[in-house]
Length: 293
Image (cartoon, rainbow, N blue to C red; front, side):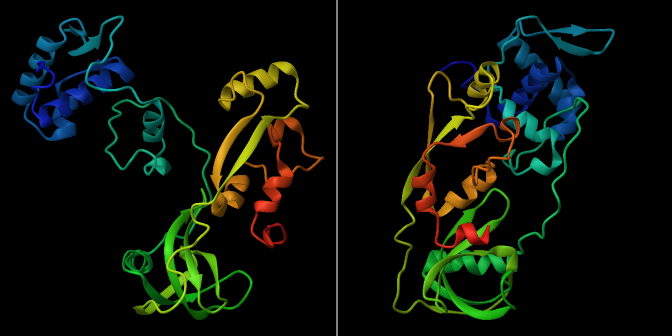
């Protein structure tokens, strides 16, 4: 067993933050640990001595600044650098993307965030009976407000949850219309009853169905722009990027990536990517989706 493996979990966590600050900010001191973990100055000093013993070439103390600075060529051994998580920490609206973990950034760089329009949050009083219905095969009576008709009470049999990239839906068998549908959770206004499921499907037979969507860089772009975008979209040297998409999320996938349709008036600089197997993709869309969109 190495010295790193022998570290107690709580000490390892503190030393990971120490390395996080060294890696992203190039400096760290005892106060960083005392504030983040509520430990004493003495314990923080013990942690720094332990880290110096493990990694003697990682940092150098600056008496003038009263903090340690990372040495040139510093490579963390406990903290695994994670750029997406660091960027998520910089954006308060991306706390969910950060995995719900505490923000470890001590000195953030200047950041501007393009704000999303606020949406009504999902209420626990709605989500909890939906989740329980999925777990135990129940039907629940909901008061639902669709965009196409007045609110009404109806029985549904939830079978799963779907995230569109913008909002959460409940995938459920609609007893009123005798078909599966996606119910926006924030449009469920109330849940007043539940019961054991009767006859009917216990799961959506299309839940596992997938379609391969073929994506390419818009050929109308100049060669240089195509090369840049090929690297950005991880296409690489291939001409086409294939993405396996659950058919139930296909409309959301297209909308989220701005490729719902191929409008000839849309500039290639704005569209950037196109769907190569458009006919196959359009046939896989739910009936009436194009009309609704």
